[in-house]
Image 1 (cartoon, rainbow, N blue to C red):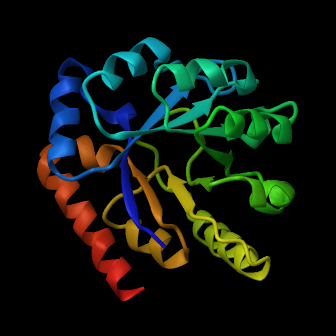
Image 2 (cartoon, rainbow, N blue to C red):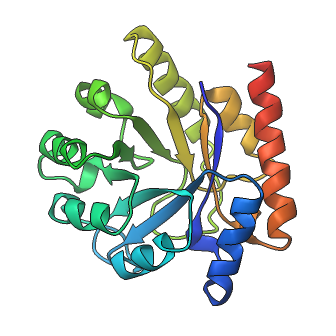
Length: 223
């Protein structure tokens, strides 16, 4: 299993975005997590295709685009065209989840499915063999800087056990409230793709990214 840090662009300083993305690349970061919010599925509005297209021209990182939008199927081709390497949709936001997953797959990029804290992973068990990643939200989607929901640890454990029982090899991504204190909890529970925003971008970006990557690598070596 490959363990990776996915810095969340939602916490970046947009006045220095290009510089910060360069810093992440210099630290060996391979993936950038990009939260797209529409003000409908979640209360906030973040950024969309023009921003992604713009940074695509300057970055070699892989773009992990997390669509927190209603009926994301409508925009799959647009997000692929502007540079997405992976698209994650929320099970709760899709009228037909299987059709949406198939459309993303047909577009030639990786596909993930996300669930809110109140949604059980068993609710989407039928789709797990058809996706590349399961995203478990560890906060309520829509805002950065939230506190980790403690019940998430058990949910990650249960998801990992379910995947093991079903003999499905699928990475679990976690998003929300991940910091130096909660990182060991989610790693031990079974997560391998770690989305982190505030604890990476606040303060010394290069130092934070290096430290979080080191902590993840140390766990991976023991796992």
